[in-house]
Image (cartoon, rainbow, N blue to C red; front, side, top):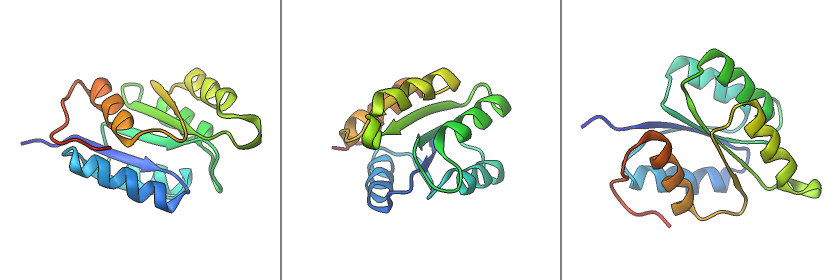
Length: 131
């Protein structure tokens, strides 16, 4: 069986762990990165079908990362995630969609909703249930 591959980019280590577990349970091959710079390097070394990218991160933030991914790989599926901090997530998620995210989810979100969004984008049914 050919598993779908996902790269998760987020500076929140606990959320990264939870997302990794949810995608692995759903049958995905998972790679993770703590910021956009490392995420870009990992993507270039081993491309995936889907990237889940936080917007506000140190080193290389999400909008810049999404823009670079979209320009280099137009067919790549991208889900943006953000809590938005003081300004609220809507402005950041709208910007992420504008630069190329296919979907955008506001933190906090249900892990099952994230995996379902990935399945929709990739046209695949997950192998397990994540919550």
